[in-house]
Image (cartoon, rainbow, N blue to C red; front, side, top):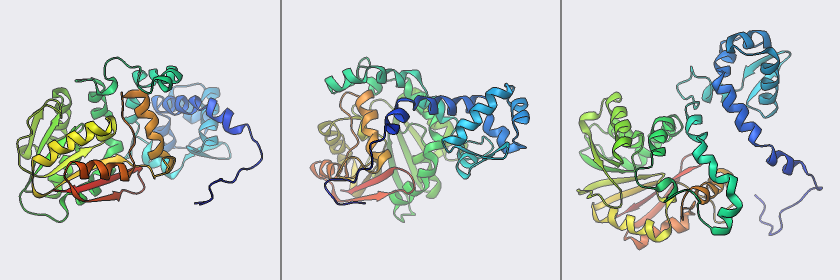
Length: 342
């Protein structure tokens, strides 16, 4: 990475402008391919236009142009007149793969999530979302039920490393609070890694129905307790050995996050730990790209959320009374686990 204060520039090129203006086509093409079951058809072969059109109940012209476009943007590959999976499309888009992310398109493609971007200039002027109420953090917002159903495949690969970090080798009885549990996979993974772990999950009642169903499927429902309500208002009980805050702090401003962390600190046992899973950009706030760009999502959808740097998160933790705050990037994802101890 260059350390120069003036990054190198090439010859002027309008390509980046046109590519950005036309980026909506990439989203539409991927969602159309998922809807048509194109990736399953490619995986089953033989991959020629005629076969794919028949398998997808679509026109040959439409399939040819869609497949060529997906090849151009690097989603699939073309050899002669036939189309094949790339390693990424085979793993993440073929519905026969256990790590398929196609269901995630339902949530990320929700029109309610796209709506604010039609008025992004006004949002930038105001510095806050134009969505009604508190945006996506409005109490009981039904968007989180869809999140719990749809985003589990995307989050699943993070669960095992998070569980390892949180447990830190502890094999005996532990009590873990999972705040904003969503699909529940993170708390469930802790329970799977430690047969003596008991999980208490906090979220809205309808969301917890999804989490509990996932706990039942995983065989840990007998060690999984639901605590419905707002993370800011519900009595956590306790004390706890660990608290999970997964994809939650970025929805709020610094004082709100610090106040919540103080509440978390109060219910931890001495030596207990709080683990937040977050998009953590570098101090330059423009790298790495996916973590840094998450700030835009928070600008559009929340009153005051942000993607916080580790230094900012560390300051919140310390102001809430935590010590030994550390960061643990989970490669190759854009996420980092931030851990602090009481």
